[in-house]
Image (cartoon, rainbow, N blue to C red; front, side, top):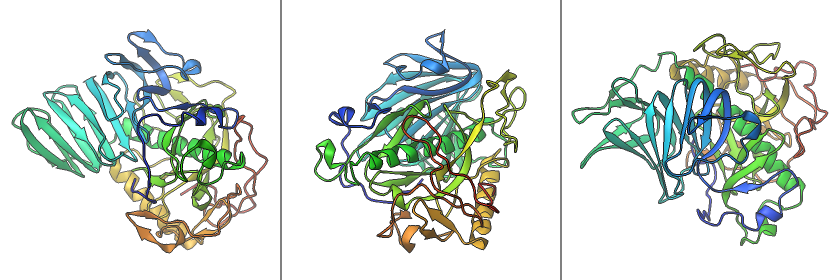
Length: 427
């Protein structure tokens, strides 16, 4: 979740105007909040069903609503910010402003993942009788059924009841009525939306990693000088045709999500510690068993069901490079049904990778588990060591893997495969 590299220049308006004509084939650019990025099961825009095959041009404008019944949906807010809807949830886009994106949770449960909030911007969530301002990185959950609540899984939120302000820190939640005080929430409680969000965070990181590599492969260099900016690039969403979804590129920096997955800009993508994990082409979101079931990762790779709706028979995973936080790596597979279970699994992953030599970057550079790349920790993140390249090579656990295992901008899988004895992405 925390910053791994300082962005010198961040511009909210006019992002990538020239980049729209300079990107490799397969990418287009958007800076507008409210992009519907992914759905599973049944989702609706203003009451009309959404199709997973036609999401590229689906945006939430002011006063539009997105809803689910037995299904889930992911919406992109400001660059680096993700809104996820659980089953039987309705959210309204109040204002799609980049400086102050405002949404209202009308029913059900929603989660907001903030990986890189730009200075002087914020996300405002309206729920119950309160407005909740998110102006720093973190992971936040909102429920509008019964007594509305706001929970801070990571980060800090400012909750306003009219003129009264209540600061809510990590591990606390608040009932959204005038008399509420923050209290500790049950981090061991199974949470279907949390589990699904963890899987989506993995997919978003994989898509971003591939997009950043493709920019470098096209010859634009670490500073994207070809885009007309003075040595630095800006964050934005890029349509990745290989994943059939938008990818977030964090400018020329690197950031980690609250789930432990990494996002690296083209200038530093060669320093990203990676694991090799199963990823479904065209999006994917995990394996669900029955109505409201908690996801589980199956060794066979079959995508399974969401509330009884079978995935396409042709769906099959590809093992692809996914950046992770070397100090608290993201967890692939089972055991993520609650924040407490996720933290325990991530701590175990650090121990496991430490005993097997740590992580490797795309170039083969070793990154010890529990330490930032290059051994430098500043601002909570990883400062890349000089000299690392950008070849598509990764290692998980004690085994190596061959190069070329990534997906190019046209969506074709490379020829790489895990070397003998590779631990893969099993934590």
